[in-house]
Image 1: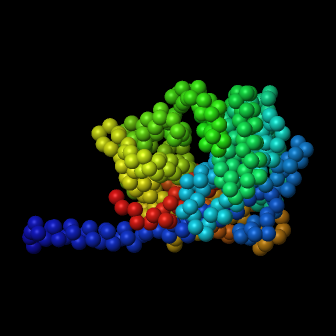
Image 2: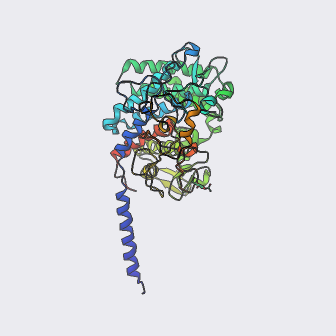
Image 3: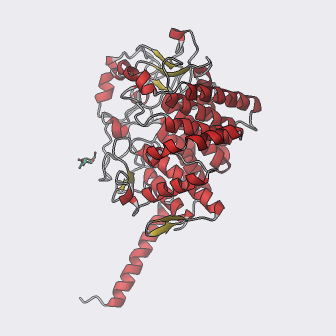
Amino acid sequence: MRVRAVDLVRLTAAALLVLAANAAAVEHDYGDALRKSILFFEGQRSGRLPPGQRVTWRRDSALHDGAEDGVDLTGGYYDAGDNVKFGFPMAFTATLLAWSIIDFGRNMGPHLNDAVTAVRWATDYLLKATSVPSVVYVQVGDAFRDHSCWERPEDMDTPRTVYKVDSNHPGSDVAGESAAALAAASIVFRSRDPAYSRRLLNRAISVFEYADKYRGAYSTSLRRAVCPFYCDFDGYQDELLWGAAWLHKASRRREYRQYIMRNQDVLGAGDSINEFGDDYLQSFRMRADNFICSVFPGGASHRPQIQYSPGGLLFKQGGSNMQHVTALSFLILTYSNYLSHANHHVTCPGYTATPNQLKMLAKRQVDYILGTNPMGMSYMVGYGERYPRRIHHRGSSLPSVRSHPGRIGCKDGTRYYVSQGPNPNVLVGAVVGGPANLSDAFSDTRQLFQVSEPTTYINAPLLGLLAYFSSHPNLNS
Ligand SMILES: *[C@@H]1O[C@H](CO)[C@@H](O)[C@H](O)[C@H]1NC(C)=O
C-alpha cells in the first residue's frame, strides 16, 4: 500500500494529537506534591517531636545533643538517610526553604503554614548552634561511627560528638551559610512573628561578623570530622557573599551592599554554578545571564558538566543528581520571574531565552521528578503509582518504634539494610538522588545511596517550584 503525502500529514497530525493528549494526561497535582514535599521535613526531625507531628512512625530522638559541650543542641534536621546533624546542609536547606516562601509563599495556599513551620524547625536549631558569640556548632554526631550502623534515630547510641568552629578554628563557609539562613528566615517571620524575626536578623549580623573576621574554611579546621561528607572545596568567599546578600535583603543596610561591591571580584574566580545571583547589582545581571546560557539546553556546550539525558533530565556528575535538578530549576524559575518583571530576555550566543522558556525548562524538570520520564516513575516517595520503595534511609527502612518497640542495635539493623523488601515506613514526600547516569534508568536499591537517598536540600528548593506550578498549571511553551 502506498502512503500518499496527505496521509502522511494526517498520520503526523494524528500522532501529534495523541502526543498532546498524553501530555495533557500527565498533568501533575502540584498542590499534592507540595503538601508531600513539606511533610517530608517532619520525617527528618531530630529532638522532641511536637504534639502536631503528622509523621507518626517517628518518635523523639537525640535528646541529649550538645550535652557533651554543656550546650543544648537538640532539634534540627537529620540531613538525609543517616542520623547526623550536619550544620552546613541544614543552613542551606533553611535558606532555600525561606527563599521558597519569600518568592512563592503566596502560591502555597493551605500549605503555607506548614512550610513556615519547616523553616522554624531549622532556625530554632540554628539559633541554638550560634548562641555563643564567635562560635558556631556545625555538627552533632560522629559521622563515621553513625554511618557504620543501620539504626533508627530513636535507638541511636553512637557518639554524639559536638563539632564547632570558633576564633581559633575558623569556618567562614559554614558560618556565612548560617548567617544567610538566619537572615533569609528573618524575612519570612517579619510580619508573622516580629520578635522572632528581629532575633534571627540580629543573630545573622553577629554570625556574619564572626565569619568575616576569622576567615578560613571549616574543611581545614575540622577536616577529619566533616570530610568527605560536607567538605567545602570552593573556598569560603562565595558563602561570605551569599551571607552578605541575604543580610542586605533582610536589613537593607548599605554596609552589606558595599561589602558585596568590595568583594565581588572573588566571585569571578568561582564557579558560576555555585553562585546564587544577587538581583540588586547590575554586574550580577551579566553573570546571571551567563549562568542561564550555560544551563539552557543547546547552550550546554559552554558548560559541559551540565548535560541532559534523552528523557530531558538535567544531569551533573557526582551522585545525588536531583539536588542539582531542584536547585538549578529553582534558580531558573526565580530568575525568569525577575526577568518577566523587568521585561527582559536572556541573550545567549546564537539565541535568546525568554522568561517563558526558562519557566518551561524548570517545569519539565519538576515534571520529570513527578513521573513524566522514560521510566514512568515518580522520584518523590508517596506521589504517583510508581516510586522508590527501598530508599536509603534508616528510619524508613527499619520497623518503626510503634510496630517494634524493642531496641534494634547498630549491627542488628543490617538485615533490614540488605533486605530486598520495600521499606516499612513510607517517607512521604522524600525525593531521592535519582538516575545515576544519562540513561534515564533507575535502580531502586537501598545500598546505592547515590541514587536512593533523599536529602533535605533536594526538597527545599522544590517547595518554591511546586508552589509556583500549582498556581500556574497551564504554562505553555
Ligand atoms: C546507568 O544506570 C543504570 C541504572 O542504575 C545501570 O543499570 C547502567 O548500567 C548504568 N549505565 C552506565 C553506562 O553506567
